[in-house]
Length: 211
Image (tube, rainbow, N blue to C red; front, side, top):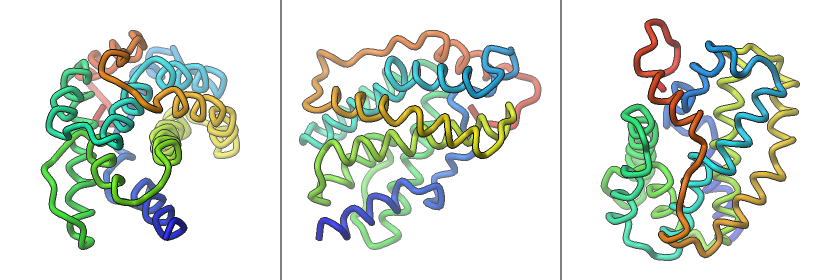
């Protein structure tokens, strides 16, 4: 059953799962346009900050709390408060809505639209997988999507993008470990440049990503 549960989670977090994640850059598009991220080294540094101090860390903590049984309605409100900008909220809510709808269409229970980490946490409660496994794979999917955005828009070669992702595995593992047993009191974000870019992205005249 554990093997089947792991396959289910892998499917949910796969790029093939219809969340539309390819359309979101988490503010990275503006950072590239402004020259803040120019190459693989810059991309790795940017994503490291997002994972350890920004949206990645916040998602990991929200996911952990939901997996531990926190009220999903309360966590959904908290996720909206943490979003920081209209686009950041749209990014997580639209993908979470698509996730909940697709899981229901596959025969799972119908659940309200939620921010993505809340929706994934609610669905993953019944899989019987370890908390760290769920958080780690979620963060890997989150990071992979942003690496893909960088590969397309910087642009980078595919091998360079995969090297960036591989180099971030240690960070993903650490953030997942730190999120275990998360509480509201310890939840914070501090990737201010990424948050400001996400807000400024709303006013870009020409853009290829929604966020």
